[in-house]
Amino acid sequence: MRARPRGWPRPFALALAFLLASSFLACAGSRHEGPRSDAASVTLVGRPLPALRAASWSDHAALDSIAGHATVVAFVSFDLPGSLRVLPALEAWNDAYARYGVRVLAVHVPAFAFAADSAHSATAARRLGLRFPIGLDSAFEVWRAFGPEARTPRVLVAGPDGRVVMDQERAAAIPEAERWIRDLVQRTHPRVRFPRAAVASAVDPEAQEHPAVHLGRARVESGPLRAAETGRVANFTAQLRYQVEGDLYTPYPVGRWIPAADGLTAARGGAENFVALRYDAGALGAVLGPAETGPVRVWVLRDDRWLAREDAGADVQFDGRGASFVMVTEPRLYALTRESKGGHVAKLSPDQPGATIYALTFVPFGDDEKP
Image (cartoon, rainbow, N blue to C red; front, top):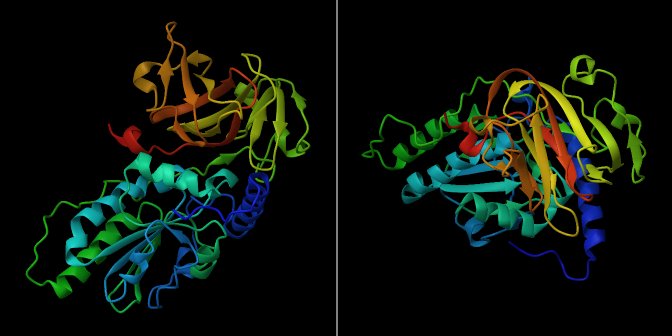
């Protein structure tokens, strides 16, 4: 992907990225991966596909090749689980339908300031094995052109005439998009017959997904972080009986932490420094970042116990005692637990200062979707 313009100091670039991200989230809403009742109000069906050139593309020639072809455009955020669930479908469509002229593209809409860095999105694409063209919309210009009140993930399909024939959000977009892709292919290749089984990953389109819980001061919705001062070390004490009486999906930090607009950074490491959260079922994930000095181990407990190996997410490791942790080597979404029923209390405890917790998520993705 195209590198950031030379001459911008990195702190300035990241600060600018966060301001842009805050603007995006103000338009899209903090729960931008959750269900909407007014999704039809943002549809582009019947309209020409808006321009895509404002994004920084991994393959600029791909934009020149979409004219006269059926085209799939997906808006995704690499660090939120709803988007990660649609990426395998995009890769499968690229493999299956490119031979019939279908073009598949994704636009990465950063959900956090660190995700606006071109190196981050390039690394994520390599890690996920994505081979179709990806654009980084760090200034949210393409997002606004398509309608900023929509939510990611969002999938659009346009015909060879450039007009949108399908525009949907969330997992429900996957089977619907494939039906449109096949219909468009068969209009130009009437002898083609496809197998009954869908190419795309099987995701329940009716499943309700709880939105991510953000710990950044700009987006936290409730709890003690709402009153915290940004940029200063704060001492948080254990909330009385928060395991039982604390509000669901509300982060409760304990110990010394530094609240920031985008996340919560540990000012101290150790077992007495943690963030606790009550949640009701789901697969727990966390958007985490390492310290400036390097990787950080973050211990993971559920209901005051180490995770059982059969319950652990794909990114969890175990030490010789059987204690569960994730090694945070880069800022991204980490899978902590597989999907479970019933209420739980999760605790995350960095073993040294500098680690940042950006958000907690509750939707399975990747390997943790597999039974």
